[in-house]
Image (cartoon, rainbow over all chains, first blue to last red; front, side):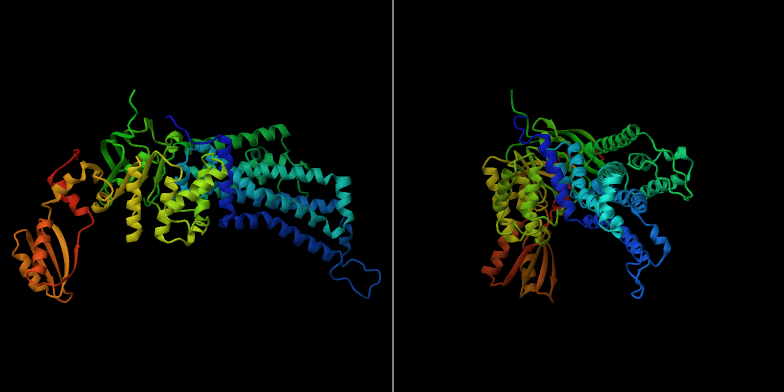
Length: 295
Length: 318
């Protein structure tokens, strides 16, 4: 070969990520990602509205000069309890729902959808190593999802503290270190997104039936109600272990969450899942032929 | 040291489970334009997919510019392929589509944009390149695919039925374009199931049927073999019975069927040239009125059946 008219791998990777981002932004998936990642915002808004109602802001008695809250319990709402409400929403809505399903939709569609839509050959006909195509696709997905995730996370935090007024933000930042914690939570969610997306990319490339994804979801959720040792065989266990509030045990809940793993151990496990998933997908795609069902 | 062959297939077979795609094909493509001719299901697309590195052969070897073609970026860099599939990134504009794919080559954006615009202009899409692909007609989509295949100025161009979906003018323009590329010294492998379309572009053909290479070489040899192939012809005339009587007297006419209601007749002849002469005599000498003459089996399937039955070609056992 005397002429290799193509550029460096980094530029190819960036171009693949750009193409992925352009495609995702114009696909129906953008709406799915938006709906799923902003669902916690809706939840948090509902909770905040309910708390405001409980505090008597919404239905105060105009004849009552002292403006007592409608329910006495509402008097107990403070920054600490508001952050606890936020934490529960974060754990249940983000980790166990939004992140998981967004990653599932995009991960399993990454290669499968190109085959179904008969556009895979456009990628395979370019002089790009296939692992770069894969990594670029994942990067494109993250470029699309991360701004949605960050905005959703920030809004949830704001809504959690909104019923307590502007002073609550200052207190949350000063006394509870919420800015750092928020950043850490965002990074952990991004890592979870990569881990699950990688896993689903591998599964989606290997098999067509999405049912296995729901088995994985069932296992991730159900393991919380199983002996603590079994919880270590889930990705969510290590994701939870990386959060600033490391014990997420909900008082009064019927499940008993396992003691969190160490930070290094958690990072290693999640990193290994990502590496194995992407490696397996790259191997599968490396030798994949471009055959369409009706061709 | 001599340069490697452009495309070299050595005993190449490709099966889809039990189904034969192509079987035991050995051929070396010559520089210039090569026409790949065969009826639907002959294995043309499979052969092109194997050459373009989209499929791996079940057995045998495929070398493109001296290298294995399958999933090989070095081959992809120098090969342009227009696949038959009509799928696109529908929400992209034509220029955005080609530019985005050229960028995957690691090109700078300005170069990718300019090359995309140049290719689309070459294919007559200058005025429509900024429209979304989902608004394109079938012909415009076909032109966009071909523009993508040529945009990076490949050494080898593989075009799978590029004339499909084009109107008469579009077909003419595409044929002229391919001829020009050939004249410029480019190497083109182009498929069709219509003999005269291929003949308009090149004399060098490969004929496939049922996954086997039936013949290769000069199209004139094929024409010669076709000389005595029974050909069905459709005529529209105000006097179908008189035309039938006249043409039946000709020795090359094998059968005639008259359709009075439609002022038409179907005729089977073993020599199209002699039939044509007879028809001229019917019109000029006998004062006959013929408004339409068309070959009823232009789809080349029957011709291949004929050739396969009479010649055998490069056909393997089984």
